[in-house]
Image 1 (spheres, helix red, strand yellow):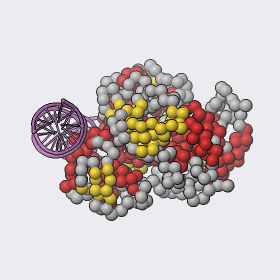
Image 2 (cartoon, helix red, strand yellow; image 1 turned 180 degrees about the horizontal axis):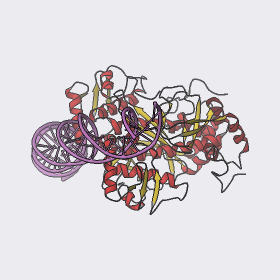
Image 3 (cartoon, helix red, strand yellow; image 1 turned 180 degrees about the vertical axis):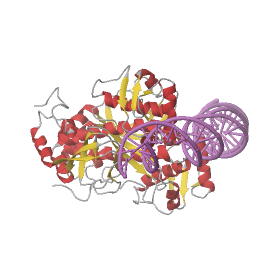
Length: 247
Length: 247
DNA sequence: GTTTGACCTTGATCTGGATCAATCGCGCGC
DNA sequence: GCGCGCGATTGATCCAGATCAAGGTCAAAC
């Protein structure tokens, strides 16, 4: 009998996000046991590279703690981040045994890994997992499209404001749904990594941060700790319309 | 018994791409009959809007002929294309009844539509379809990430060259796998739509096209018909390394 | 065959963000 | 405590691409 309320019981098994996101702990015991059998944990420190584009990858994984980034590098060194992975996000692609992008830990990171082959078999035998993975992938695609608007059409100031609001929002979902009024949070990225995210240089990032500070949109209690006194004022700088996104 | 060779029998049922891509015609008759029962065709002319972001969408669809674009618009009119849909690409998102983006026909377009609710039910009852959809979505995500590198880090000239090579390649898959040497094809987009794709203005697009023509990288036998005398030379202008992409 | 309008090209100028360069601040190892 | 090095800030200058403006081309409508 299908479940109703408890789709993602984050509290029950906080260590393994894919568990909550792929299946429901209380309804689908079989899959949980299968997942359990093929999983293991790995940790990385801030700045460490988890895999290089082109490397063989014998696992897929789910972020438990920390933040990781996917990026691409051109021969001459120009670099663009193409994915930002927060806790519960998925790393790796079923049916592909080589990494398509560099994966780096931007903070200390813990991953929950699943050996590739058994995971793939499970995708075939357990439709609920591949259906959940489809949902997650579609969400990522929507995020990528929002990001494309940012890269292609927003000004530097709008880019910074958008980035801050994204981080604030994803932090906030753990507490309240939509942040409003006063918000404080930690940046999981260096200025350089922010620049790679936003398609800017680190100097421009720094200047725009200073400018937002001067204008009272944000305050810095530390290079990395941001205080947003009025979240709506920040949203107003993003260039997005009120609701800021996907319907 | 599972199939071997004929995964995408394009010839057998050229009218309905999702059929070939989601299931194999010779192996999974049941799904085909189900799909058959809920499908219908729709046609649009170049320039027509298929749906606006926020509209109710009671169908999902597959592009049969022509090219459609997904785009986002900011309040002040800045516009960014976020998806380019060629034949066999999928439109719409299961479990979401409102469009997230504007969808416009950039050439005359024919869609093969499936009524949403029965299609969703089928996703649940028929794992092979949702697995196939997962593959397609992951491919789209990879394309989006390639596109993000283009938007964030490439010069105008590299953007144009990359765009031309993408169109040439996707046209060419119908004939030979990797184009090389002499290639000719039709642009499915106006200069303005190209600008929206690339995060440029139409004037810059026009200038860079002229510049590539002056340098002999391309020739125009018409505003829309492009001739590439040496595909490798074009690839060299894209800024990508030799193989140009995902491993 | 002339008008109209959609598309495209080209020129002149301006500007946001890149680039080059100097300095600051702070945590860490010795 | 001191020097080192990484990350961040700030200033001066430059330039790729935006913006503003004027035509050009061509097919369809009258």
